[in-house]
Length: 183
Image 1 (tube, one colour):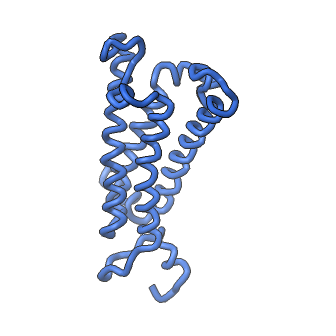
Image 2 (tube, helix red, strand yellow; image 1 turned 90 degrees about the vertical axis):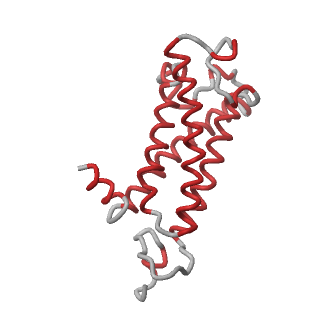
Image 3 (tube, helix red, strand yellow; image 1 turned 30 degrees about the vertical axis):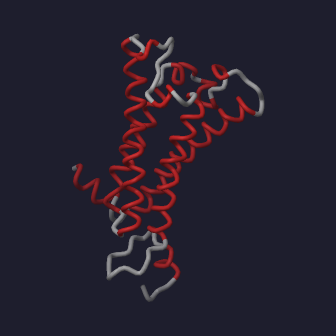
């Protein structure tokens, strides 16, 4: 059953799966940009700047459930959809995004573990990730999302506009395939 699902989302349904995945990614970006706007434009204190989901469900933000869940979805999505990237460049950039997201997920796992165990690392009063020792949490989330998103966008570009490679199968995501009947 899982093999059939993986073949489907990396084959005939790859374009649809990527669209759904990118919608999730962009929704998460919107949350972080709203949170940044709440802090830097509206002047809200960081604990009150929770984005739209955190505004209605504050426990999701304060307990790290929302961020850990998203990090897990991102990791699973990047891993699951990786086989659909069949070119050299698109697969390389997608894999870079996956590697960065793996570490990002690890950071969220550390935060979630501290929250659940009630024991914070580094003698900090709140759950703290490794990179958070040097970068404040809000800025760190924006940074991680950016360094995962940029290689994803580059991968999507090469996936949609593949360079001339030796007769590899073209995904339905490739725009030239829809625009030109000769391909």
